[in-house]
Amino acid sequence: MTLYTLQFLRFIAALLVLFFHLDLIHSGYKGVDIFFVISGFVMYYTLFSAARPNAFKFIVNRSTKIFFLYWVALMVLYVILPYKVDISSIKTFLLIPGHYAVLGVSWSLSYELYFYFLIGVIAYLLPSRFQYSVFFLLLAASTFVTFIDLSSLSLKGSLLNFLLGPHLWEFLLGILSSFLSMRFYKTIPKTIILLVAIVSGLLLLAVNITYEDPFSYVVYGIVSFSIVCFITAYEKAVPVNKKLAGVFKITGDASYAMYLFGPVITMVIPPDIGLSKSLVIITTITASILFNQIVENNFLRWSRKFILNSIH
Image (tube, rainbow, N blue to C red):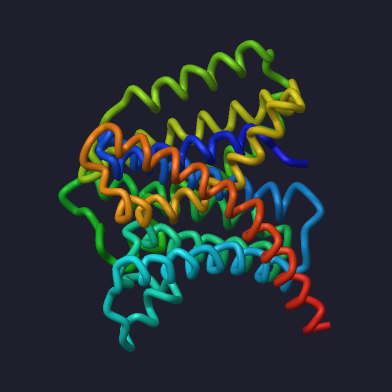
């Protein structure tokens, strides 16, 4: 079952990041926090609440989704503004943690790959009777590290922080939101669910905490959790209008392209005045939707089929 409100949230998250790069919203990086929570929600929804794909198909689907568009963006960027390519670039091409982020936003993709690896191990290799206990332990450990980062004992920059820090915490909050969402829509009145979702969304837009402040992860993580949890619960109780669902799907599907192509387009159209910033926004959205509909979807469908058939 496709949750169209999640598609809408993906689009909003990509817009917030784009606005941040255009210096239109100083706290627009909170779009990344939304992305991480959504990733956790989708992974739990995919692997624990629906028809689970086999392990190899899961790996192929996730890796092609991440790398195809990323490599396209890297190639386009190289044509526009050639960057140094040497042996160290392998880390950048493969999104190895600590790589040089040529695109600026690719650091987050290293976390996404780590999330996929972690939840894949739990889903496919761990006996089901231990899975919820492991999630609980990871959430407890990650919460501890996240709040330690608020103190003078901060672990920021360490391997432990990468493995159990704020970004994993947001991903785990997404898993928790998926678990709770499927229960909220049956037990809480729809008006209350919608009200909480709206208030959480307004709060996310209103709060402005700089990303240098580690407290931002706590605030944006919790608010993003609330938005994702309650807006999906509302959709399960009240399905989205078909026409609106179509718009949400198209824009949501293009959100990853927006996330990666935005920094590239700003190099083609310098966003130095209001008019050029508007042009960057329109160009990014339009180019991303067209590329997703014409190229990305078709290539991913073909490549996944080719890889899976080659193995079998």
